[in-house]
Image (cartoon, rainbow over all chains, first blue to last red):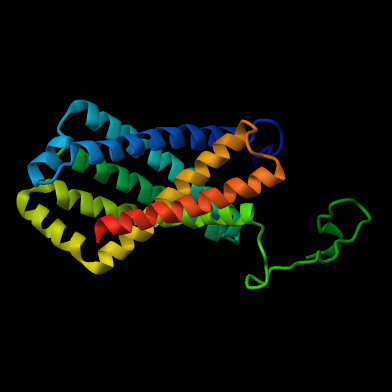
Length: 115
Length: 137
């Protein structure tokens, strides 16, 4: 059996950093996106689709998606750590969340690169 | 199970039940606590909404025919109510998240300020969601 050290200076630090970096990425994306909606005013299908046609927008949206998946993982893991008991239930739910997030990420990439 | 092998925190101490006060309807959270639990609830709501939003995004961007279907779904009152709820979740999560980031760098930690900026976060999210509601309707 592996004795994991769950105390000390570094335990959980990576999740903490991931949560904050991904939060900043998503906040910037959302602000820029709201700006585009207000000033660009895409009103019909071709304008709306055209918005995601450019390489910069695709990569920015991909970065946003990646941040969303990581951020959701850390957040949901925090929630499950607090409420999901016993360990077997928590593990099953964590697995479910991870599988869902990977599937949703694949779906998002599929949508983005179909434009 | 043999009682002698039961793990104890310290040898010789007997664990006794700790006091619990977890009646959800009687717990009175302080305002920063309210902002915090709403941050968690809104985050969970946004997680649940991901597939719904992906579906709408796919419809909106796939083809002109799907775009028409997307507009029809978007125009439905239930969709609008859901989107207003999601807008609240997004704004609360964003504002409360910015507040937590500022607290990370020791801004707004004093009790009075922590209370004040929690109230600002809660109200600003409701105001922004209401504005989105007006735009949608």
